[in-house]
Image 1: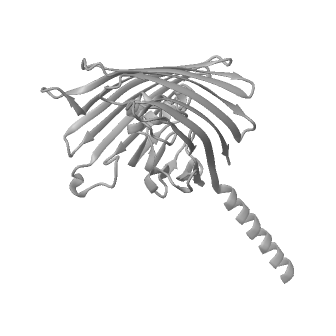
Image 2 (image 1 turned 90 degrees about the vertical axis):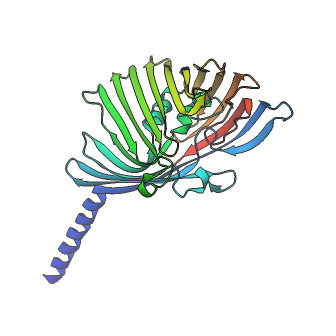
Image 3 (image 1 turned 135 degrees about the horizontal axis):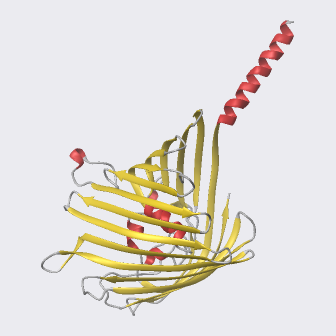
Amino acid sequence: MKHQQKIALAAVALISGSATAADSSVTVYGLVDMGYAYRTDNYDASKSGRNGIDSGIASGSRLGFRGVEEISPGLKGKFVIEAGINADQGSAAQGGAAWGRQSWVGLDAGVVEARLGRQYSPEYLIYGDIDPFSHGQVAKASNIFQHVKTYDRINNAFYVTTPYFGDVFSVDAIYSFNRGGDEAVANAGDKRFYAIAPKLQFGKMFKVVANYSHDYDKAKYTTDTVVELGAIVDFGMAKISGAYAQPKLESAPVGAAKEPKKYNRYLLGATVPFGNFSLLVSYAYSKDKNDLDEKATQIGIGGTYAFSKRTDMYLGYARIDADDKIGVKYGVSDGSNTFNDYRSGFNLGVRHKF
């Protein structure tokens, strides 16, 4: 009888352990991206082109952990910690930060999810969908839409996101006492940041997104804002996307009156699938509104070929048309490597997700 009781207790313990494991999980994931890139047409005519075997051209190489626990019916605890990797050198990306890509913890109540930590901004996530190159390759939209690079990840952030209510409306919002680093004593010199991004979708075919970002520098007493609107139309045989943005930068005053520098920026892109291959094309344009004649145009073309769900190849070419003496340099950077000095580039690489 005692032996049977021990077996029964062991079975109960095993079942309980299995249930607990089913309610909580941690996933290890990552991506390794390596490729060749060539850049030419430097703003300084005395400098030649640059050849390189680089990491993270289309997508930043990374190693991450994500976890979820069902605390109670309708309530989950979540976390993500994600480290960037320079796979070409075996070093840490994001300036050597241990978990520089993302590091947050949050609660998901179904109708709303709240997170605390270092996170992507709503603006950055929006352009991940609108830009055919999705923040990667030499043709990425943020080479021209430079404000997107400024507000890619936000430190010390409180982020709120909702599902699509009625499968139509959703909203994301973020707030940080200091987006750039740890909050200072009395918050002196902090960069206070907030943004809100409402989104509408109508089935799988049509999506409209908007974003307002507000960045206040307490050290310089300047406020930079961005207002933008974007849309995606997916016809199945092709996906067309576009965006308009208007940055207004008090941090870059113009003239004796020190008026904020303003820009009009436009993006048009398309993704056309042909079986395992997808053709990517984009056009991006920026011009100041302060009569400085600071204008730049980027045309990009490329593609991806999927060998499987986890491994693909990519290629891309971009050309930026901007004057040698332009005040703000626009260059063909990529998913991980910044090169503001070159106006033309080509890349070819492979990435593997796990």
